[in-house]
Length: 327
Image (tube, rainbow, N blue to C red):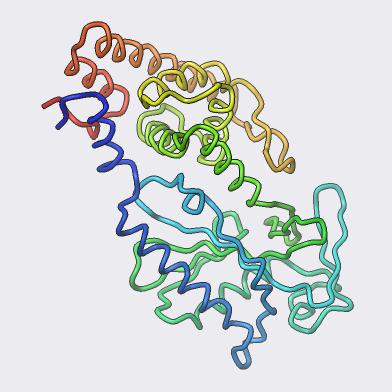
């Protein structure tokens, strides 16, 4: 229940959008504990696990960027391994890790002196059974990670094995047995800097709009692509309004047009992130136009008509029944 649009959004974000603070704190603690367990794998007798490169491990993904919305289902980690004498070559966009001069721990996971990323992920998956409180481990659907379930948490950990290169990029499994480049630090820095440049208003805007994208959009946009679209929208403005409803209204207007445009990978690796079909783009554009018109009606009711109840009801049409009712 709420008496103003501002209090309605505050309540909505607190009760339905943002992760619960106690679970976030517990998740951070569990992630830190897991790092310690993973770092012990290369010292386990008879496990023959590749040696870690502890200084280059990375926390990444929406939980690390603070753009995750409830419920917390997964936490992403990049677990860095040392090359141990291996080198790499690049052909097109595919990286090959060459192991003729590497130690046996990598040689054992190689085919004809080429490190097989599938074998590395499978080695990680099997090694996770050595982790305390282990429940199960599976291969991630994309083949890039091992997904670890622990007995005491409702979330899983997606653990991506990786190597750090002399160019500053990371190499991760490419699902075909070889490797591809990435650098999630660029994504993290982009979110952090854009948020700071807009007085800390970006993170909540992303989370609130992610809720709309997941629950009330006709065609759900992938989380990473959607974040980048919101960031691009934010960067197109001199500043974000202190009123979140004004920003949401303006975003819907932006999305209705720019969903048809290319969305460049900020890392300069993947090219155009927007691989939606024309029909999907049109469906999203039409829904965004509808949401924009409803948002205009809501803001008009709030500012011109001074009718908070009508305004809140309009926002409920956009965000659904979990948006608070007028009290």
